[in-house]
Length: 71
Image 1 (tube, helix red, strand yellow):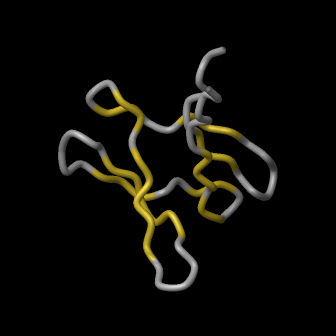
Image 2 (cartoon, rainbow, N blue to C red):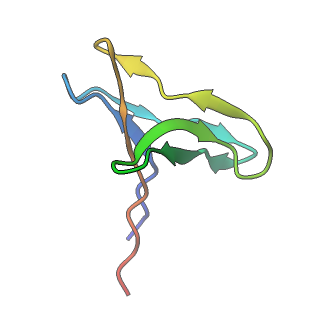
């Protein structure tokens, strides 16, 4: 069973877009917030490169992460 790569999904229309890869690894989500944590940007695990969450239909897209393999 293969792992699903992380992607962005538009909550309005369902459009899907792969998460960018940097240094050969998909960029990880960075969450902020006190009570409700929200993904505010993505960053590379190997360096300080980061970028904002892309917009689609005028709203930030949702980050859908990797699905873990069941043991």
